[in-house]
Figure 1 (cartoon, helix red, strand yellow):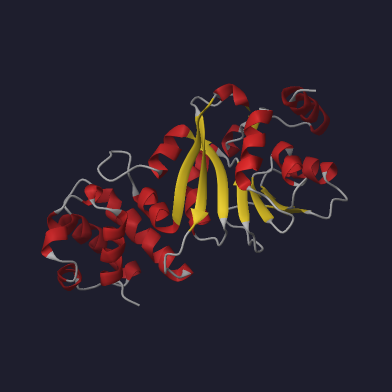
Figure 2: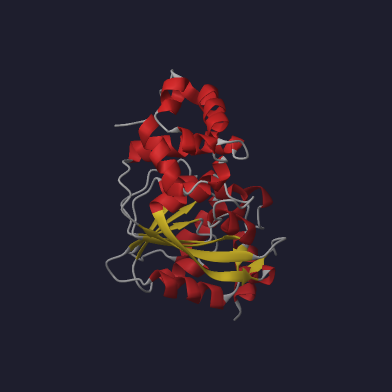
Length: 276
């Protein structure tokens, strides 16, 4: 039976339809699922986080190798997942919003998250501890994540993920027909590998807030971008004396356009303004 036929049977049995508001596009391509599992390099010791279990097609493959912690918000899908994996001691279901959920310790993330909140999901992923992640997002979003200095698509998440992970796009063109319903654009698969970065959880959260504010002014030189960003959210970032903060950065960097600076340079700026 094809995954599309199985999905249709599940929709009839559990009386659900894809929820556009929740960004539901269900995977129906076995090849994409197999590639995700292959890239994840799973072992019995792994505890894998799946964000949005959906109909359980990916979950079922993952459970052949390791324990799976699945977070699903849709109540009808939670019922279907409980029925499908009842009695499997390696399956743990967390019913709720991933952005708010308390998570157990994990080693890896393998997921096709809902596309409509990609930025929010990626931000929370940056705050988690894990060895590697295999993620499928819309191709345009993946291109933003891996964007290099100087490119228009480069944003705060490009820099944040640069500093925290090694990044590789392993599938550039996942056709819309791999999902039901078909999304309007192609998708892509990327692999993140955690690397030593020296930021605590608290520092990472502060860094994320700093970069998000800074990149609202990414086409300005760093001096103006910093001044605007720190004035806009300075109280939350703990900076009151903007001139003193910018003096720590150095004139050469301050004259450069924010969007052309390397991630490591922006990390150094952050550390000089917010030493711990």
